[in-house]
Image (cartoon, rainbow, N blue to C red; front, side, top):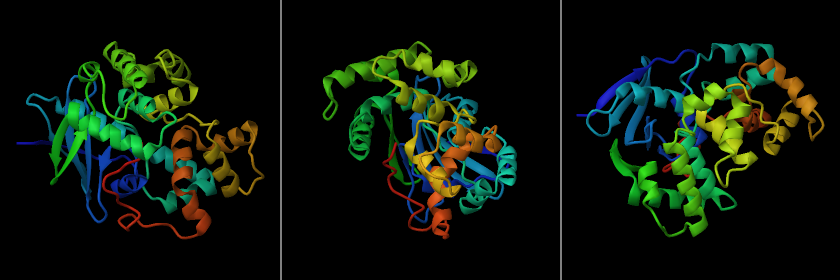
Length: 311
């Protein structure tokens, strides 16, 4: 029988908003109350599948996986992936200090940054998607996961988890993945086996040192090292100065001439501390709702997708 766990959010959280965000190798359909997750468990020795639902008592996960799976590790990883490992009260206080951020919080109530399942899976995605159409490579990733990973039946639908590092290292070729990228995927797998893509370890290093360590993996440059570290570990307070879309939306929201300088953007972001990462994600996700004056409602046709095909 599948085992279950419950996470009681500290501060506002909306699973419907996480579904609407459309991030990751996940499955959710319009009108459903479930998000399906399938991933390599921290430690990268096995895969699990989790069907996640939310009600008035908390966020509940139903876990499918090998016997003897450590439920506490699964719970902690799901909490990290949904940014439920933090108290959102401080983020709401940032919205009180900054009315623009506060308006975004109203437009997307309970939205927290959905993360990659792990730095390992973020790095694998970076190798696959680099200079390639994301939608096309999401399908390649799904086929790779079905062929060499693990497939779970979650709330009536199948979802595949990425191959674990040991499985990935046994792959010599795969349709849609050039030979040089197979070799880079092997480099990611070896780094994971060596502990260099451990989420807790990278968090202890701090963002700058963690990015420098990740750049030691062949094929991972500055842009993707930031993606892996920020969106694979859960750093809450990193300001993404190198993201043009975020800069452009911030200029519109604050009615400032674009492009914003680093100094101007950093000054705006002082009010968001210690949740600058969360604020940047919220700006990208909800700016158009505020600018158009018509917030989208979770559960509408824009709030659920099957399957999620973005990173």
